[in-house]
Length: 148
Image (cartoon, rainbow, N blue to C red; front, top):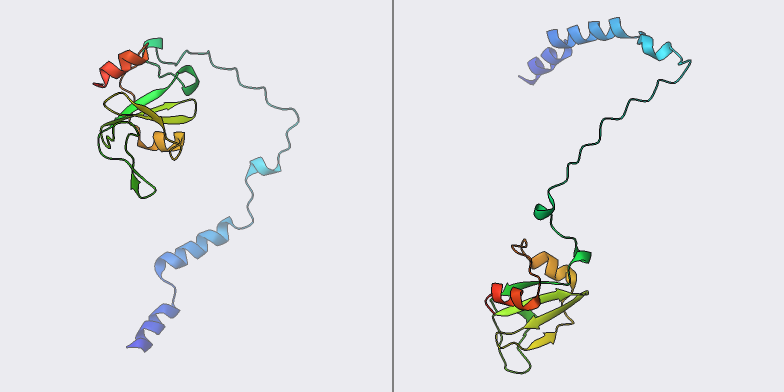
């Protein structure tokens, strides 16, 4: 059986034979563009008209440097370095507002106590924050919007 397989493999198939013939015909031929040398450079294309493709101002998302800070709710308990974070004043351990401002993270409990959390950074906030759903002029407006 293996002898028959080897014998069949010794002859090239019809497709292989056709490929070899076509390769032999094309061998040595050079496209005409290769032999030409350019005497003068081609003129630069005329620039297209400039179109304002930006969103209208009311649909644009502000950049980080245009905001005083961002905040998001964090309903579940927050565990950092193997320990649960709790409010230093009232002992609350869930239903936080996580505030990100000036490259610092602050936690605010439901009672309104705030504490700086040095174990979190802006990268952590960006990984866990969802898309912004509203912008507010004051801190109090944002607290009202988030139910605090």
